[in-house]
Length: 184
Image 1: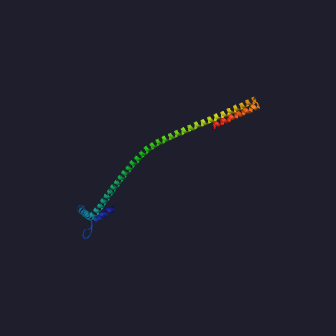
Image 2: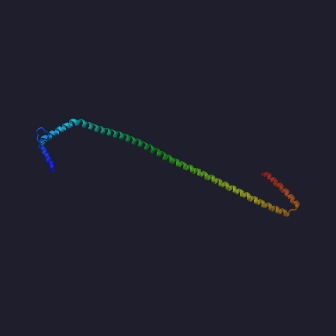
Protein backbone atom coordinates (compact mmCIF):
# COMPACT_ATOMS: atom_id res chain seq x y z
CA UNK A 1 0.00 0.00 0.00
CA UNK A 2 2.87 2.29 0.77
CA UNK A 3 4.28 1.69 -2.72
CA UNK A 4 1.03 2.78 -4.29
CA UNK A 5 0.96 6.00 -2.30
CA UNK A 6 4.60 6.67 -3.08
CA UNK A 7 3.96 6.31 -6.78
CA UNK A 8 1.21 8.97 -6.65
CA UNK A 9 3.45 11.31 -4.68
CA UNK A 10 6.26 10.66 -7.13
CA UNK A 11 3.95 11.51 -10.05
CA UNK A 12 3.04 14.76 -8.37
CA UNK A 13 6.70 15.88 -8.27
CA UNK A 14 7.53 15.47 -11.90
CA UNK A 15 9.19 18.41 -13.46
CA UNK A 16 6.80 20.49 -15.55
CA UNK A 17 9.26 21.63 -18.16
CA UNK A 18 8.47 20.18 -21.58
CA UNK A 19 6.66 17.07 -20.48
CA UNK A 20 3.21 15.90 -19.78
CA UNK A 21 2.32 15.69 -16.15
CA UNK A 22 -0.32 15.92 -13.51
CA UNK A 23 -1.28 19.13 -11.88
CA UNK A 24 -2.01 18.31 -8.28
CA UNK A 25 -3.76 21.57 -7.61
CA UNK A 26 -7.31 20.33 -7.33
CA UNK A 27 -8.95 23.74 -7.25
CA UNK A 28 -7.35 24.83 -10.51
CA UNK A 29 -7.57 21.69 -12.60
CA UNK A 30 -10.86 19.98 -11.66
CA UNK A 31 -13.34 22.67 -12.73
CA UNK A 32 -11.49 23.22 -15.98
CA UNK A 33 -11.23 19.50 -16.72
CA UNK A 34 -14.83 18.91 -15.76
CA UNK A 35 -16.08 21.79 -17.88
CA UNK A 36 -14.07 20.52 -20.85
CA UNK A 37 -15.35 16.96 -20.39
CA UNK A 38 -18.92 18.16 -19.94
CA UNK A 39 -18.64 20.48 -22.94
CA UNK A 40 -17.35 17.66 -25.14
CA UNK A 41 -19.99 15.29 -23.81
CA UNK A 42 -22.74 17.81 -24.36
CA UNK A 43 -21.53 18.76 -27.82
CA UNK A 44 -21.00 15.24 -29.15
CA UNK A 45 -23.35 13.35 -26.89
CA UNK A 46 -26.30 15.69 -27.29
CA UNK A 47 -27.27 14.23 -30.66
CA UNK A 48 -26.78 10.66 -29.50
CA UNK A 49 -28.65 11.33 -26.29
CA UNK A 50 -31.47 13.07 -28.18
CA UNK A 51 -31.64 10.13 -30.61
CA UNK A 52 -31.72 7.67 -27.72
CA UNK A 53 -34.39 9.65 -25.94
CA UNK A 54 -36.43 10.07 -29.15
CA UNK A 55 -36.19 6.32 -29.85
CA UNK A 56 -37.19 5.55 -26.29
CA UNK A 57 -40.07 8.04 -26.54
CA UNK A 58 -41.25 6.46 -29.82
CA UNK A 59 -41.07 2.94 -28.33
CA UNK A 60 -43.06 4.09 -25.31
CA UNK A 61 -45.63 5.82 -27.53
CA UNK A 62 -45.87 2.73 -29.78
CA UNK A 63 -46.28 0.52 -26.74
CA UNK A 64 -49.02 2.80 -25.40
CA UNK A 65 -50.71 2.88 -28.83
CA UNK A 66 -50.52 -0.91 -29.11
CA UNK A 67 -51.85 -1.25 -25.59
CA UNK A 68 -54.75 1.06 -26.44
CA UNK A 69 -55.51 -0.94 -29.59
CA UNK A 70 -55.35 -4.21 -27.65
CA UNK A 71 -57.54 -2.69 -24.96
CA UNK A 72 -60.10 -1.58 -27.57
CA UNK A 73 -59.96 -5.02 -29.19
CA UNK A 74 -60.44 -6.66 -25.79
CA UNK A 75 -63.37 -4.35 -25.03
CA UNK A 76 -64.91 -5.21 -28.40
CA UNK A 77 -64.41 -8.91 -27.78
CA UNK A 78 -65.94 -8.49 -24.32
CA UNK A 79 -68.97 -6.73 -25.80
CA UNK A 80 -69.30 -9.46 -28.45
CA UNK A 81 -69.06 -12.13 -25.76
CA UNK A 82 -71.69 -10.33 -23.66
CA UNK A 83 -73.99 -10.09 -26.70
CA UNK A 84 -73.53 -13.80 -27.41
CA UNK A 85 -74.16 -14.56 -23.74
CA UNK A 86 -77.40 -12.56 -23.80
CA UNK A 87 -78.44 -14.32 -27.00
CA UNK A 88 -77.62 -17.75 -25.57
CA UNK A 89 -79.44 -16.92 -22.32
CA UNK A 90 -82.50 -15.81 -24.33
CA UNK A 91 -82.37 -19.02 -26.38
CA UNK A 92 -81.93 -21.06 -23.21
CA UNK A 93 -84.97 -19.37 -21.68
CA UNK A 94 -86.95 -20.10 -24.85
CA UNK A 95 -85.79 -23.72 -24.84
CA UNK A 96 -86.65 -23.98 -21.16
CA UNK A 97 -90.15 -22.54 -21.72
CA UNK A 98 -90.63 -24.63 -24.86
CA UNK A 99 -89.24 -27.64 -23.04
CA UNK A 100 -91.70 -27.22 -20.19
CA UNK A 101 -94.52 -26.76 -22.68
CA UNK A 102 -93.36 -29.80 -24.63
CA UNK A 103 -93.09 -31.83 -21.43
CA UNK A 104 -96.61 -30.83 -20.41
CA UNK A 105 -97.90 -31.61 -23.91
CA UNK A 106 -96.17 -35.01 -23.91
CA UNK A 107 -97.47 -35.68 -20.41
CA UNK A 108 -101.04 -34.96 -21.53
CA UNK A 109 -100.55 -37.08 -24.67
CA UNK A 110 -99.22 -39.93 -22.56
CA UNK A 111 -102.11 -39.64 -20.10
CA UNK A 112 -104.64 -39.57 -22.95
CA UNK A 113 -102.96 -42.47 -24.73
CA UNK A 114 -102.84 -44.50 -21.53
CA UNK A 115 -106.48 -43.69 -20.81
CA UNK A 116 -107.49 -44.83 -24.33
CA UNK A 117 -105.44 -47.99 -23.93
CA UNK A 118 -107.05 -48.72 -20.57
CA UNK A 119 -110.51 -48.17 -22.07
CA UNK A 120 -109.67 -50.52 -24.95
CA UNK A 121 -108.35 -53.12 -22.52
CA UNK A 122 -111.50 -52.73 -20.41
CA UNK A 123 -113.64 -53.18 -23.55
CA UNK A 124 -111.61 -56.25 -24.59
CA UNK A 125 -112.00 -57.65 -21.09
CA UNK A 126 -115.75 -57.06 -21.10
CA UNK A 127 -116.08 -58.57 -24.58
CA UNK A 128 -114.06 -61.60 -23.48
CA UNK A 129 -116.20 -62.00 -20.37
CA UNK A 130 -119.39 -61.72 -22.44
CA UNK A 131 -118.03 -64.19 -24.99
CA UNK A 132 -117.07 -66.66 -22.26
CA UNK A 133 -120.45 -66.20 -20.55
CA UNK A 134 -122.25 -66.80 -23.84
CA UNK A 135 -120.13 -69.86 -24.57
CA UNK A 136 -120.72 -71.23 -21.07
CA UNK A 137 -124.47 -70.57 -21.37
CA UNK A 138 -124.50 -72.33 -24.74
CA UNK A 139 -122.61 -75.30 -23.30
CA UNK A 140 -125.00 -75.50 -20.34
CA UNK A 141 -128.01 -75.28 -22.69
CA UNK A 142 -126.57 -77.99 -24.87
CA UNK A 143 -125.92 -80.23 -21.86
CA UNK A 144 -129.41 -79.57 -20.45
CA UNK A 145 -130.91 -80.24 -23.88
CA UNK A 146 -128.90 -83.47 -24.22
CA UNK A 147 -129.94 -84.63 -20.78
CA UNK A 148 -133.59 -83.71 -21.43
CA UNK A 149 -133.45 -85.45 -24.76
CA UNK A 150 -131.93 -88.57 -23.29
CA UNK A 151 -134.45 -88.50 -20.45
CA UNK A 152 -137.30 -88.13 -22.92
CA UNK A 153 -135.92 -90.89 -25.11
CA UNK A 154 -135.53 -93.13 -22.09
CA UNK A 155 -139.10 -92.39 -21.02
CA UNK A 156 -140.41 -92.96 -24.50
CA UNK A 157 -138.48 -96.16 -24.93
CA UNK A 158 -139.82 -97.55 -21.69
CA UNK A 159 -143.43 -96.42 -22.28
CA UNK A 160 -143.92 -96.79 -25.98
CA UNK A 161 -144.32 -99.75 -28.21
CA UNK A 162 -142.52 -100.04 -31.49
CA UNK A 163 -145.42 -98.72 -33.53
CA UNK A 164 -146.09 -95.78 -31.17
CA UNK A 165 -142.43 -95.21 -31.02
CA UNK A 166 -142.14 -94.91 -34.80
CA UNK A 167 -145.10 -92.50 -35.01
CA UNK A 168 -143.75 -90.33 -32.18
CA UNK A 169 -140.30 -90.26 -33.74
CA UNK A 170 -141.73 -89.29 -37.10
CA UNK A 171 -143.80 -86.53 -35.48
CA UNK A 172 -140.77 -85.25 -33.51
CA UNK A 173 -138.57 -85.39 -36.56
CA UNK A 174 -141.13 -83.31 -38.41
CA UNK A 175 -141.26 -80.79 -35.55
CA UNK A 176 -137.48 -80.56 -35.43
CA UNK A 177 -137.33 -80.04 -39.14
CA UNK A 178 -139.84 -77.21 -38.84
CA UNK A 179 -137.93 -75.64 -35.96
CA UNK A 180 -134.71 -75.89 -37.90
CA UNK A 181 -136.24 -74.12 -40.88
CA UNK A 182 -137.53 -71.35 -38.60
CA UNK A 183 -134.16 -70.83 -36.91
CA UNK A 184 -132.23 -70.84 -40.20
